[in-house]
Image 1 (spheres, rainbow, N blue to C red):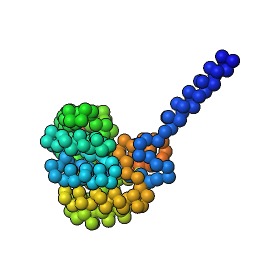
Image 2: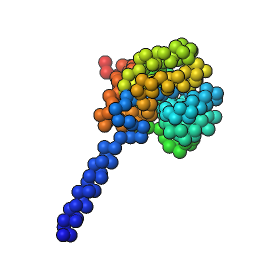
Image 3: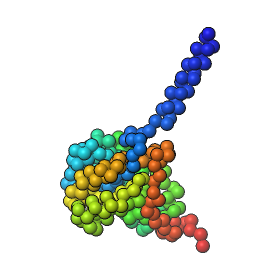
Image 4: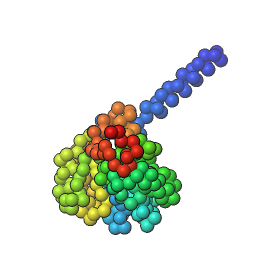
Length: 243
């Protein structure tokens, strides 16, 4: 009898572990389509707060790729991002064109930003996004973080019109998209609410980048091929470029 009970308990424990391993991440909903809203270049002293106001009102989450030198003055915004369930990630210290930097310069841009973010919210970021989507392949291999580009560029920085930005996103969003926006413009802040409402009406759930990556690993979503521009040669690659 004791041996039978032991075997039964072991089987129940195994089932419990299997269930927890397959448990979907927070924000996942069966049968839904998923996108990640991402914002670059902040925190802005005015517009980031408006974006956060809308996210809070809508009960939505997003991922913010912040610029390091802006973190200290925007510390309250970063703290609020975390409180709202959003993620704070790395967009380099000075929004530098990484094509112009040595490998050591690139790593310093990222490391300084990681330290600033940790000082503000108590943890270092998991992801980074290179400004302009530009980075050399060899230096990329030296970065101990996951790179995140985008699959749908709202071009909000160019259009500067909330209605046009909203229409473009809603007409082009696909399951698994990483949507690029910038919390640095009034028109973008104005577009966030309609974008969230429109995406939800079309059956999309808005999740953070880490959740989207976990959903991909679970086979719940396939992230579309990101926009990338890996340089074959740059100062950061000069030591390892062949030929």
